[in-house]
Image (cartoon, rainbow, N blue to C red; front, side, top):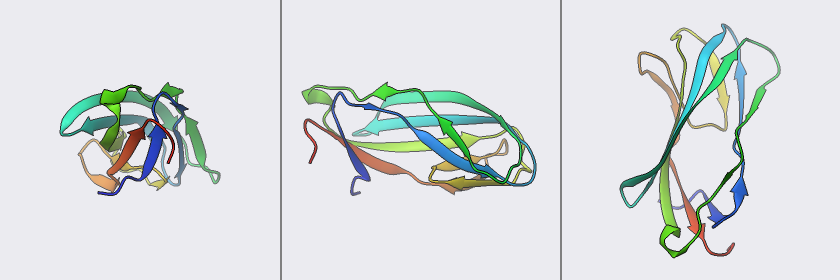
Length: 123
């Protein structure tokens, strides 16, 4: 699979999720992110994003700043699976540029698994 993007080792980054809630309140929205390198899980993070009510304007949720690891052993390709979970299965939730939304019944509404590279220098 062709990498979606490339990060320079040791660089700082921040994830920003943009989404819209249209009908009912989304209660207890959670984010889960798992990263693998050559089939081995190397990173996992879970975070509560909060509860969101319907509104015309999209929400922008900014995550904490993180850094990519550095060194020869961390360079290469990574595969990622990100998930968004909510406590309620009846919500209408429009997702823009995010990866997966799953309710308590494990019904998946949207999924996007992707790969990225970590390199010593930018291409």
